[in-house]
Image (cartoon, rainbow, N blue to C red; front, side):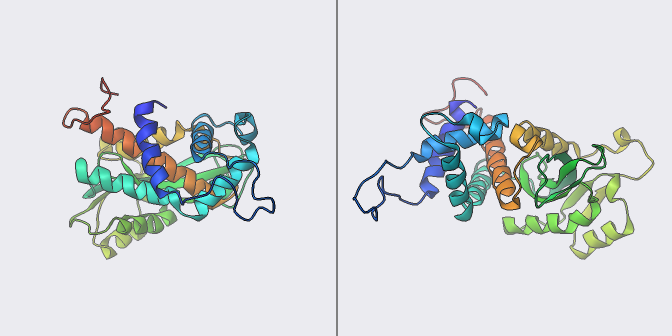
Length: 277
């Protein structure tokens, strides 16, 4: 990833990190090896996320695989990844503006070779272990949240918990339209949307998709953006909390990238890229 993307990401990430001494204060001799820099571990996590390599494959003389895992778990426990995503969404909403009046929800299945808490038998991969995410985006395609489940779960039951993530954004406009594909075409879905005061734009079963493409292509494009991060497209993580943390980091990168691209022609700042990214 280019520096115009990683530098603002790190600048905000380091603000959320707690202060840690270079040497552990309770060490019996008063000194030992210096603590590995958070920036080194952060860059390693970005490489794991982007290229899908194992922790062992990305280690070198600067950092071990156990250090990456331990620091990752520490940051997950502190909720830093979810806080970072929230800050990115607030910044994007303040500068460009989210489009929560029209949202799109759709499911996507990826591989999960090691199984795990959120994995299940994939109906499109000969029963191998797979992971399904029910993703939600705004009208432009900015990821707003997701719900993880096994690949053998249907999209429709995941609609309610996915919509619950919408209310985490704060006050919402009236007349929100939810764009859904034919997998949600049922009276149960319509009743659920009516109970929440939402309007549904649902494709009908048996009709060709291009006729009713409407506003669903944004979430499908966002799924493609997320799958470009190979650690998510073929996920070896077993714990749901860790998978969610990597998704939060991915959504933050997508949001910041979209913010820079859309603000490039309307705003000026000191380290603005010399050309539109």
